[in-house]
Amino acid sequence: MSKKKAYRNHLKSSKDLVTTYEATRAGFVALALEKNRKATPFVAEARALKAESSKVSEPQKLLTVSSIRSSLLTAAGISDKAEKYLQEKDKLKAIQGLIKNFLKPAGNDFVEELVFRFLLTRGDQLGGSMRNLGGTLGERKLARAIISSLNLSKIHYKWLHTKSKKWITRSNDDTDIELHLAGISWINSCGVRTLIFNRNIPLVKKNVDLSFLECEPEEVKYSKNSAHLVPKNYIAFGELKGGIDPAGADEHWKTANSALSRIRKAFAKKSLTPITFFVGAAIEKSMSAEIYSQLKSGILANAANLTNDEQVASLCNWLITI
Image (cartoon, rainbow, N blue to C red; front, side, top):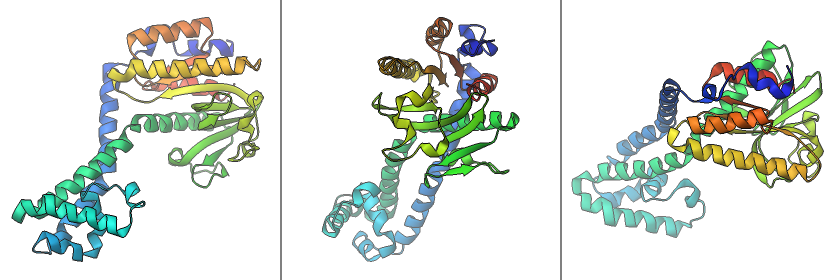
């Protein structure tokens, strides 16, 4: 079977792409668990704040407790990011405003009011970081699936560490590397293959979820002489949408479809034809028909539902061979 028709290994019709109710439910549960995990430090901070602030008898004396200074700013609505840009006089003004307008009017309940407002700001910050949680979890799942396919095929690989920006040779213990991974590289029968996640592609002038290059991993750098700046190095691009909410499914596909179309057009102007593929967690019936139509016509080379382990494994087995 040709690589262009590799999707037939796991898709028989457009119906196979549709996300099941069970998968949607499991996805929401996974998101809820992850949100609770990420909220745990905030709850612990709130408890510590309550314990420290309970040591004073009135709101104004909170200013004398140096250990809760940063927490007072948070309760005043100042985020960690905003705090870096404020002078001490501005910080003091914000805290005094909190005390005057909210803590003093609360009377004997000023500690509870303080903790409540602290959690209100922290919750807003958590909400911001949660907006792309589905995408983050989806990227991790796909990265782990690719690693699993490489391991099963006995293919050695290197991976790019997000913080150190260094390529690391695979070790016997690859536990949780998907949490710190920005790229993977391996060698197959076609040559060296290097996959990078969420990098800006100059020819497209946008970030692309998954970009496959034919180059040595060390040639992909964070500098002007990086291989990812050379259009002819690309062999494939993929869009990954990990959000599980059915309400946003259609919009996710429209965004991904537009991105892939933009990629194909940009490279066509250079007489280059990298293949494209799509992976999504929330795929509704109307979307699945359009995606499958593009697969049959060859516009898309492959596609899979991220919630279907067999489809993901099949797509990853294809990815490591292209």
